[in-house]
Image (cartoon, one colour):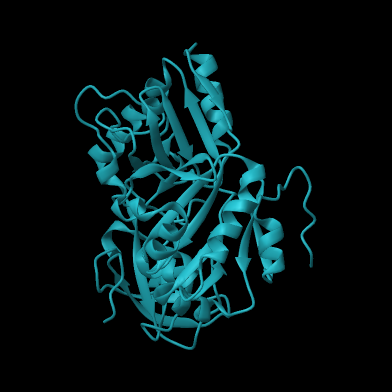
Length: 370
């Protein structure tokens, strides 16, 4: 089945490149197509990502831009993470919540200037939320989706590849920070970040027309590094405890249930939408939380559904994402578990899509080989 791309499901500057390299499947994120598979298996891709370097089309990672005198105020209103000490050049992972403390998104916030921010968002229409807040509160801020198309370089040889194109200075970029680096007369933001635990960069290409040139330059610089096209890998993501908005967390959840308490400042004078509701959750104690899960049996099908978890035939949670891990030689999952049952080592039964129950136990995150 071929995905019919229209203006409602946008292509990226890299789409023609990934098609030429044999992309075999897409998803749609932020109304934009995201490559999800190539010729090799998920397991083959996993081992490649952990040992070499990959180039990912993540143009679906759209930006919500806040610019103006009230940009910093609006940015802070949208998240319980304290942004007051954020520095220009810093990237900050930040939950976004509504007035009921429900999770709306979990972007990376890039501080470009004191009055200029990019929210690099997961799959949800945060542009409309930000515009509504700005208008309703009569804030002096412009809210737009800029012409920015991220491109990720992930894997242990990412530094070598990116240095060949953007210079040796990239090796000095600290984790979750960015620098402006020259490319063919353009200054592009290069951030040490990405949706894997293998290290790498995200390059924020700020013109659609420039995207193909940046891709080609990186591709041509990959000789001897084992460069390959790639995409976020489900095995690596689950092992690393990386959460996916829309899978592990939705508006049904609050940040504390998602294990994001350290990104929530509830004391003092910090002002943000949903603060009273989140304080109430913290006061009463959240009733469930994301954990890892390891379970037995033959390799399960890749799952991003809600398989029930039970103890003595009583449901105590559900799987959000699952797959077979070749490193653990077990099935692994991320799961939402009730408070009484989320401790490491708790035994649970997993009801997979094939109708069989499998024995498993709760694991801390990130997972470690037992």
